[in-house]
Amino acid sequence: MWTQDITRAIRPSEVSPELLQPLVTVVATLGKLGAIPGDISLGGNMGSLQARLLTFSSGVRRAMVHPDGDATLLRCALGASKEQPGAPTAITDSWQEAVTTVKDIWAELQEDAACLRDACGNVAAAKAATEATKGHLVEAVTREDKAHKGLIAATRVVPLSSEVAQVTEVVAAHDMRVAEAKEGLQAATKATEEVAVAVVASVAAKERGQHAAVAHGFLVQLVAACMGAYNYYSHVEHCLKDIKAMVGVTTGYAGPDVPKATQGDMGIPKELAEIVVVAEALWDASARLTQEHLLGTLRGIRSLLATSSVTEVTKVTQRCQEATDALPGLLPPGLC
Image 1 (cartoon, rainbow, N blue to C red):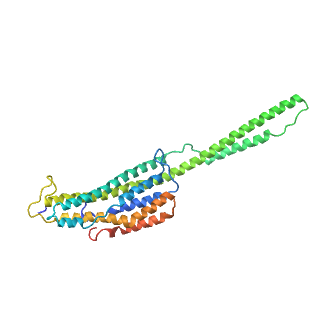
Image 2: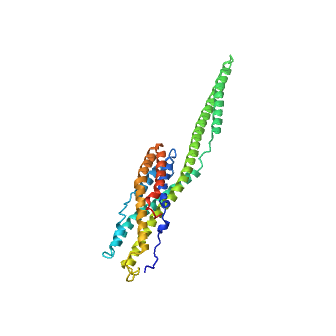
Image 3: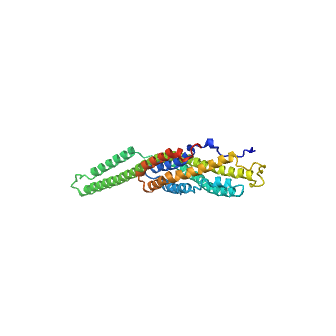
């Protein structure tokens, strides 16, 4: 009788459409990030957020373009296990390699998203180099206006004496006052320009910080969604490892560390059949979700990131909602 419980993966009763939700959330969150106005410089050698998200979306596409396989391969191989004992192991090895590749990409994407999250957090927390305000600019303009009026007053014609010596002295004093007034006006004008530049920079820094704070919130969601996607494919990987181990117990082909089944146990155990169904269903469901819903939406997001056009935002939101609504229909009836 089959008595050994070696499975670590999820059971059929634990399979639900919610397991697929992180894949949709990744795409939906990228759409939200693409809708943030302007671009955010991340500082250092990281470049801009838009450029990094374009690279990130390419990684998402790599993770989503995976072979969907043949949903009957495992079951057919298990049915032929008596005649060809090595067939199930070869097939699970092939499937496991594909699943592990996808899982590892999601692990990398999670790390990249965390890096962007931290960078945006730093930008959001950074203070402007100069806390210049519009009030400072008003003060500078007032000083410049006063200096301008002083110049006008200094250039007024002064009455001259008939004596040459006095005329020379008065003219020299007048010229000095005019020169000082000009210098004062030039200094006031330069100060006004510097304050104006500082105000613009301060406003831009504040706006950039606000946008970075919004992006940081979305990137927190993106990290969690990438972790969810990683966990999804980890479930599939565990299923395949368990299938391989169970097949070894049933046929005696799993190596010296797995005990051979006793005589009479050569039929396929119920636990093995169930986990095969789970593995196939999860792998096929993710392939259908990405091919039928998410890859097309991801192309729209890449266009949004590249052109800063907001016309795609509504489409992305609608398509992601449609993908969420389609999740229950991607898993076989009775499995979830």
